[in-house]
Structure formats: C-alpha cells, structure tokens
Image (cartoon, rainbow, N blue to C red; front, side, top):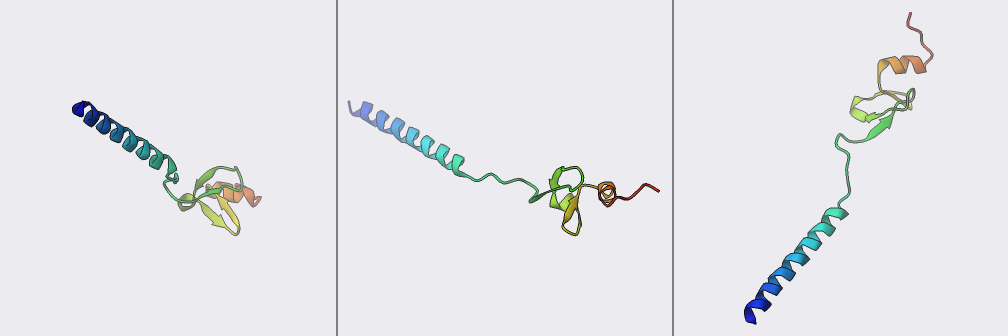
Amino acid sequence: MKTFLTIAAIVAALLIARFLLRQRRRARPRTVAGGDMVRCAHCGLHLPVASAIKEGPHWYCSREHQRLDRGGTGA
C-alpha cells in the first residue's frame, strides 16, 4: 500500500508540473522577430522598419514605390 501511494504522489506531481508548464508557455507574449513593422504607402505591404524607406510621414517598400507615390515618371 505504501508503494502505491508513493507512485500515485509522483504521478500527481508530474501531472501538476506539466500543467503549470503549459500554462506558463501559453501566457508568454508573442513577439515578431525583426522589430516593428510599417506599411508601404503605395502598395500596402507590411515590412520591417529596418528595410523600409521613410519620406515624411510615409513609409515605402522600395524606391520605385516612393517615386510612384509622388507621381513621378520613369523618364
């Protein structure tokens, strides 16, 4: 009987530990690798700030979209 109670206590402790670890894992906030994201003012693509081009209050994904959004031409 003593052996049965010891095994039951060990199993219960393992189940409680497993439950607590799952709760802790779920509570973690998810972060995006690469930092903050911005939206291209021309096409709406979301990209990392580090890869974006800023002009005034607007962000662009490429020089081409920056030029097109200003109304520029290819010539």
